[in-house]
Image (cartoon, rainbow, N blue to C red):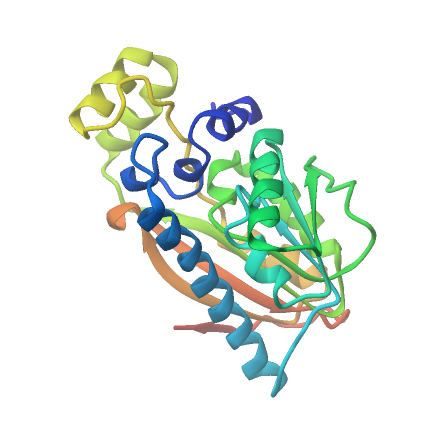
Length: 261
C-alpha cells in the first residue's frame, strides 16, 4: 500500500498533482495560472508558519539551517529558503528532486540542496534550526511515520523549531473506509472510483493514514519540546481531522501545553 515507488511514479508523471491533488494541478491541465496559484499557496503557508514563530520570538526569526521533509517539487522548500541561511529539500522521489532543482534554477534559489530521503534522515548534516513537513505524513504508513517523527524531532537543535502536519482522526463512514482500502488491492475498484470522480481511469490511489495524537505528544515531550501549539483543520472534505504542530525545542522534557486555534 503506497510504496516509495508510487511517489517516484507521481514525480515522473504528474509531480504537481502529487503534491496538491486537485485536477487543475494535473499534468494535462497545469497552465501558467495554475502554476502561479500552486507556488503562491506554498508562500502563504510558509509565511503563516514563520509569522507564528515570530510572534513567539518577539521579532524576526531566521534559521541558519533548515529542512523540508517530503519536499515534492519545492513548493514549500523554496519559500523556506527565502527566510533561511541554507535549506535541505528531502524527498523519497528522485524525480521530485529533479523538479526541485529545475524550479530553483528558474526562480533563482541558490541556497537549497536536494537530498534523497531515508527513514533515518541520514543524509541531513547534524542538527538543524528548523525542520518542517506538510501534507506528507498521512501518505506514510503510521508505524513508519512515527519513527520519522522521532527522527525529525531528534534533528532539531536547542532553541530550534519543529513544524509538521498529520491526520489524527477519520470521519468517513465505515463502508467508505472499506472501499478506500479495497481499491489498493483490487485495481478495478480504483478505476471505478476514478471514473466516478472524473479522474484519469488508471490514476494511482494515494494512501491516507491516521496517527495517534497522544503518542505523537509523548515523542515530542521525550525529545525536549515542552510546549506544543496544535492548529486544527479538516482535510479531504471533512473526512479527516488534520493537525498542524509547531513546537520549540528547549532540551528539557516537561508538560505539554496545547494551544488550539
